[in-house]
Image (spheres, rainbow, N blue to C red):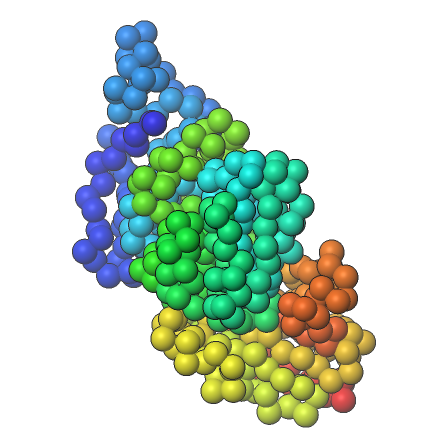
Length: 402
């Protein structure tokens, strides 16, 4: 295993806002203020003996940017300290992180238990990709603990979930599910992208591994793709490191540098997004064209007590249903002037999407209904605009749907 060269002083004793700026920073002999961008494929060695020692793992240093890179190492270290993880590995995208975290643990004959409410691409990995390699799965209603327990088999190796779920914002009891996984001898992998590392800490709740699409809040400015896997050093060594090294879903140093710069403002952006999401949720709930609003910290959310126990805030996304189904939902989305139509989320710009025809389009209607996704449903990702402008924009758009 290639070890990272690091002279960075650990900032784990500091508060998150400080860690987001300083954690993992490496400086060259030039003493640069901003993190250095190492756009290099490979590295040179002083001697052939040093190269041999480097490949044997006897000499600390970098070998090849598919394995590790100084800029990537800074991003991984900063994410690890923010998450409270022993180790992290960055990937080219969020789905690369999900796939690596799962496949790295599994072999033919193994079994996975996953929540039914998942992002469409995650469902593809569970239901279509893994079976090609002899790995079977059972999908459960993630909110029903009895279903997790009942799905366990002797060959069950991994539990997988996201919370809050996409797009219905269900809250799954991570600590309870982690307990069931542990008693079954399985690991729990949690996709924490909707909560962000600031609002929820799955590792502290008993999860073994956390994955992110860093494309979302971590970049949060619509620029680059990235993913990250966080876990214990043993988990990363046993299941992730060699898989990434040999198969190559590597993040580019440039994208890692963009993510580092995004982390510096993550807390500031998320704070405004949280404020905007809560205000927009209340405004939507008051409009006659809206059938229901789903936001984890609203009193009318079915799992509000669990949400408040498990999360520090309600998140940056609001899901709501328009009376009149798909036609009315399209009418509202098309009438918005500030919030833009996009299937991305966690951006500084407010975004909206119609899950039935975008993120979950590949499922048939019965499958979507089984996940609670209806034709009148829209998913709103709060940006950092003025909340009053967003509410006024929704008001005029919703008026057109009545």
